[in-house]
Image (cartoon, rainbow, N blue to C red; front, side, top):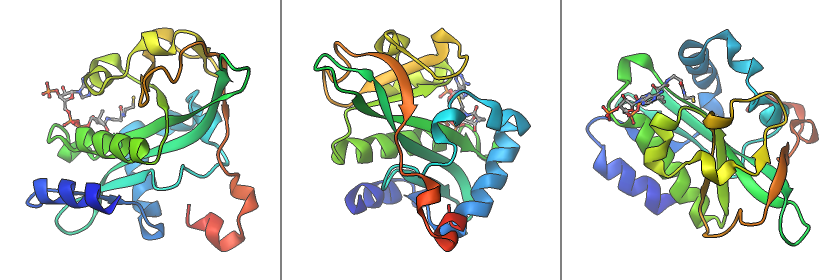
Length: 197
Ligand SMILES: CC(C)(COP(=O)(O)OP(=O)(O)OC[C@H]1O[C@@H](n2cnc3c(N)ncnc32)[C@H](O)[C@@H]1OP(=O)(O)O)[C@@H](O)C(=O)NCCC(=O)NCCS
């Protein structure tokens, strides 16, 4: 993780940095998501896979401006994707929400967050990432509807916006079925730790 973050820092030192999210970022992150995505954000199908869960270890990232303020956020979550060819659930990740402060749009921050998160996920041995989002944005990172074609979300979703990327070749091959939440439950944490999420 340190090497990845350092290289991203060096590249964008003058403008923004990509960093691991910490407990002090939670309020700023939630405000940013409210601004970028509006009230409807909790009604999204992906929320069913996130609600009451912790993000995957090391996969909650923020972008910071030179004053260290949070100007972008992305998190990835553990899911189990249907059943694989071996009859077992396929472990995978769900990406989202991704958001960048509107004043900082178009500076490559969203792309830097996704690339850093995908590198980190690959380094940690994860096999595939799903998301629901605009194909016009996510295809450039390798997310395609074809990869998610045999899977379904646990709530109504638009098929053409349901995308997946294999981090390990063939990870989703032979797999099919519904995505279910698989992250650590927030309720398993103590009160102090829950408030820092
Ligand atoms: C989507 C979002 C994260 C992009 O962040 P960003 O930092 O502006 O993105 P980048 O600078 O890396 O990329 C900008 C490019 O993406 C394109 N883009 C941005 N949103 C897009 C979309 N929804 N569909 C297609 N292309 C999109 C821009 O036109 C620009 O294209 P260009 O490189 O050809 O000029 C940001 O606009 C945002 O927070 N939107 C509101 C929340 C949201 O929609 N999140 C995604 C949930 S699906």
